[in-house]
Image (tube, rainbow, N blue to C red; front, top):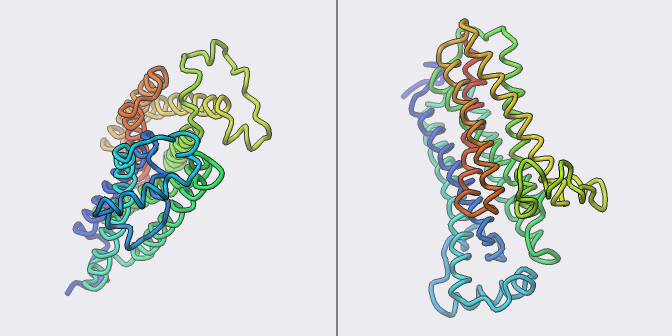
Length: 343
């Protein structure tokens, strides 16, 4: 039996954590598709255990449909929807919730096994505990988000969607960082350069920009002002101000979209600058410089994709691709930040 003190790294643990990170990425992608297809409110109850089983009879399907027909989204948006159409949106939401359960099982069960076998490096055990807690909290946050659209709204509250996505992205970053630490072990020494700080600042910038994107998604702000570089034919949207400061930040479509655009411009400039400077600094490890180039390329592609998604009126496939690349950019930025901290 392996001792806790045997080593500061474990390749099997690393593979497990990186595999769970891939599942979290898949969950974010499916979640984006669920939102874009208007499916997120099709299941009106939170049943963590029994909800894993979908309706198995015509009577059960009609019962679920009847519950959906009582919420504002059906009454104001989808009135007259057929049972067949309801099944289509139900399966999206059910798949998203099932994937969440699978992520939980894929993390919790191997965690117990690795702890019993004493294969997790001691310095990483507390991080695994934090990630387990975040995973459980994500389920509660998900229902808190869905519940906001069951009574007085026809969709979920944008700020709750941003919290839900933000927690998933935090979990993804922790999984990637901890997985890389488990693979490589403790560094011989920390890299003393200022790259450590700037790389982490950039990770934070990608995270904030992703939250701004969630506000755009939650308020359906991508369906207005579909011209670029102007907005509604103007440099500054005429209907920028919301009813209040909070409405301007989180609920007003024009202001929310403008904030996301400005964030994208700033992030792209930072990504290209980081990529150029990192490649020129030969004292950085080659892998770090290659990751920096990948960050710059991904940011540029994401900017182009964002404009295309907006101007096309946010078709589902482009919207999902845009969100997927955002998560990939966050992953690359995380890997770069991890690498430049090590000599």
